[in-house]
Amino acid sequence: MLRDWIEGLKAATPGQCAVCRSWPAQPVCEACVVRFGQPQPRCLGCALPVPAGIERCGRCLREPPPLDRCLAAVSYGYPWSGLIAQFKFHGQPGWARPLASLLRSAPWIEPALEEADLVLPLPLARERLAERGFNQALELARALAPAKTRADLLLRVRNTASQAELGLGERLRNVKGAFAVEPLAVAQVEGRRVVLVDDVMTSGASLFAAAGALRQAGAAHITAIVLARTDEPADPAAPQ
Image 1 (cartoon, one colour):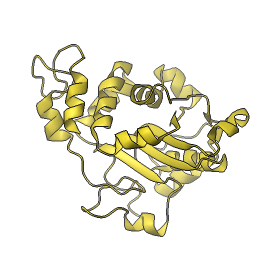
Image 2 (cartoon, helix red, strand yellow):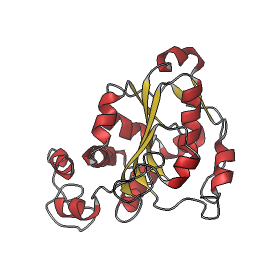
Image 3 (cartoon, one colour):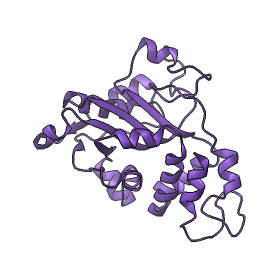
């Protein structure tokens, strides 16, 4: 719950709130968390917002994704989009802990982590890892469940073009075959409940491709956990 997020920040050194600039405050103050971090109903297949009482959107009912569940804490918008950009593009891995606390505050995240056998970060391409100096998904995973996190099981085996300017169909083709389970570790994935972790989900193409590789390796149940989800499909022209 939001109270858990606030309590999780109390151990951090007080400073200025990154959103409203109040002082002294935790990285994001209590008032801003309450204002901008309220959970909302989301589709269990793709994490897009849905009306209360609806578990899956129409598209996921017609075309079930390769994930058993897809969970997001907040929408990708103000103020979280700016904080995530600071986290991964400006060399500030210290944001992993407060952002992981925000993830844990969502009521559906903690049960998924408790049920998981393995927590796997979505791997970065080698060039992006060298450029950033760290994998933001790995930092989040370690902050969420350090004892269950493995960074050596799910591999990115093919570099891909940037997804930013691609439509949904192009994104899916772009990441096809980009992920694989370490061949010598397939037995560690087979029959396990796996949680995939990433910071932002736009179309879901990368998470779906990674889930396909895990499914091929025999994973019994796959849940994706993301900090933020864009509220609209990446390709509005694609069939809904």
